[in-house]
Image (tube, rainbow, N blue to C red; front, side, top):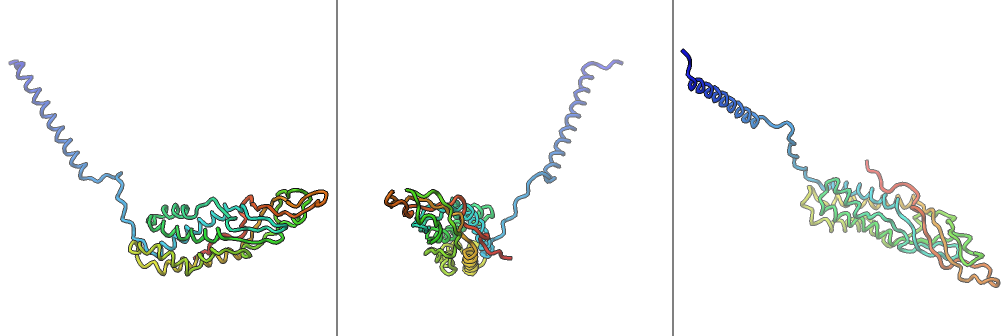
Length: 270
C-alpha cells in the first residue's frame, strides 16, 4: 500500500524538529560549561600595594636626590660674575643649570610609586636646599687670567683660566640649608601632615636622610675642582699712545661645559 503524501511530510517535519531540539540542548550545555570554566586569558586583579614605610620613603628620596643632583651637576654652567685684572670673581647667581631638581625628583618618585603629595613635599625641600647653596655660591680666583693684568688693546679675547681652584675655596650663605639639623627640621615640617600615610614615624628616617645629604655634600665639595672657566672683557683705560696697555676691568666669566670636575655626588650606602 502506498503511503499518502501528507503522511510523508509529517514524518519529515518531525525529524527536523527533533534535530533542532537536540542542537538547542547541545548549545545550552556548552554555554553553561563555558560559564563554569575560568577564562585562561583573563588578567588577574593586581594585589593591593603594600603599605609604605618611612624608612623606604627616605631611601627613595635619597636615591632620587642623588640622580637629580648629578644630572644638575652634569648640565651646570657658569655665566656671569666679573673680571678684575687677572682675577675672576664668581658672584652669587653665576652658577646655573637647566635641570630642575624638584621636577626631576618628582618624575623619579612617581615611577617608584611614592604618593604624589609626599613626593612633592619632600622634593621641594631637598631641591630648595641645593638651590640655596648654588644660588649663593661665590668665589674669588686671584690668578685666573694672568694676561688680563696688562692687555695691549681695547678688549681681551676669550681666554681660558690658567688655574682650576678647588670648589671648597668658595663659599655660600645658602650652604646652611644643607646642614643636617636645618634640613631635617624643614623636611619634618613639610612631611608631618602625611605621617599617617606610611608605617612608622618620619622623624628618624628623615634625620638619617638629612645626615646623608650633609655628608655627601661635604665629601663632594672637598673633592671637586672648578675647571674650564673662560674670561673676557674690555680694557676701559686703554688709550694709545699714552696708555698702550691696561687691565681688564669690565668682563665676565663663562664655561662651555660643566665646570665641576671630580667624583659623582652621593655617598653609596651598602
